[in-house]
Picture 1 (tube, one colour):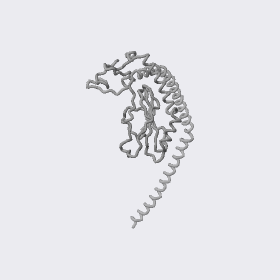
Picture 2 (tube, one colour; picture 1 turned 45 degrees about the vertical axis):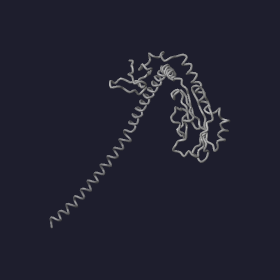
Picture 3 (cartoon, helix red, strand yellow; picture 1 turned 30 degrees about the horizontal axis):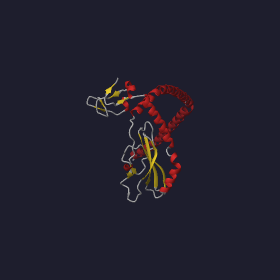
Picture 4 (tube, helix red, strand yellow; picture 1 turned 90 degrees about the vertical axis):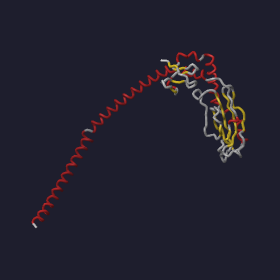
Length: 278
C-alpha cells in the first residue's frame, strides 16, 4: 500500500515539476523572441539597411559604367563593321547569278486532300510586275470558307534571297505550288464573287505590294551597279576557305560544313577539300 502511495505522490510531484519546466521554456522562448526581434528590427535594421543601400548604390554605379563602356565599344564596332557589312553585301550580289525567272502556272494546284471536283479552276490574271529579276503574278482561287469564298492571291519569284530582300510569304494558302522556288506568296483579299475581286483589282492594282516593289527596284539598281564595279576576284584575299570549283566563304563559321576523315572541310558544291587560309 505504501508503495502505491509513493508512486502516486511521485507522479504528482513530477507533473508539477514538468509544468514548471514547460513554463520556464515558454519564458525562455518568449525572451528569445523579443531579443531576436529587437536585434533584427531595432538595433541592426537601420545599419543593415544602410549597408544594403550603399551596396546597391555601388552596384548600380558599376552597371551604369559598364553600360557606358559597352555603348562606346559598340559604337566603335559599328564604325568598323560598316566596311565589313558593305563588302559582305557586295559579295552577296556578286554570288547572285542572273537566271531566267519563270512562274509555271501548271505547278500551282489545289491540294489533293481537298475536294476539288466542285471548285472553280484557278484563274490567272497576268502579271502584277515583271522584269528580268522579279516576276509577280495574280490569280483567283476558290477557298473553303462558307462566305467570301474566292481569294485574290499573289505569287512571285525573285533571284534575290531573303537576306537581300524579304518578300511576304504566307503558309496559310491552300494551294500546292510544288516547291518550285517561289519566294513570294500572299493572300490579298477574299470576296463572295469573282467579279468583286476583279473590280477590286481594277481600283487597287497599283497599290498591291507597292512599297515592296519600290524597295526591290532600289535593290536592283544597287545590284546592277555592283556587277559593273566589282568582280569576285577583287576580294579573293579575304576568303577564309575556298575551292577550285569557285565556292568560298568569308567566315568559316558562317556555314555548316562537312569534314572528311582527316578533319578537312569539304566543299558543299563539289565535295572537294576546301583550302583554308590562316
